[in-house]
Length: 136
Figure 1 (cartoon, rainbow, N blue to C red):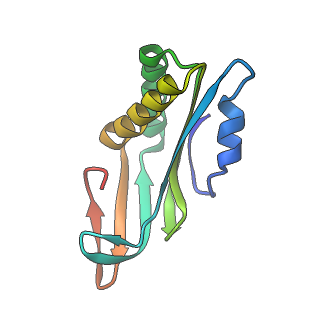
Figure 2: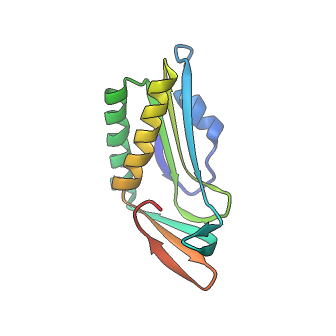
């Protein structure tokens, strides 16, 4: 499961997509919209993406992580559109026989996604709005 979507992220579906009876661990990361950034009160976020390129890069990241960490399955979902405070914006689930591999792969995937996937974040805050760079 690798995709961009406008609807809410269902964490249970990510876990179902990666877990099998041979796995001893499922690591899960969920990024949420927080109410502050850079000393400002955030009202909401807006995510934009280049869908074909973003999903292709997410697939590449997942394949590289499977090979590097020896994990079984990886699911990555990122939201687009306007998101309210507290909503999940991105989720990564990784299944593996062992927890260390699942945790390391999960961190690697989210860090790589923030650096290379063409998804842009606009922050709407009290008094204005701004495009945020660098995975802030």
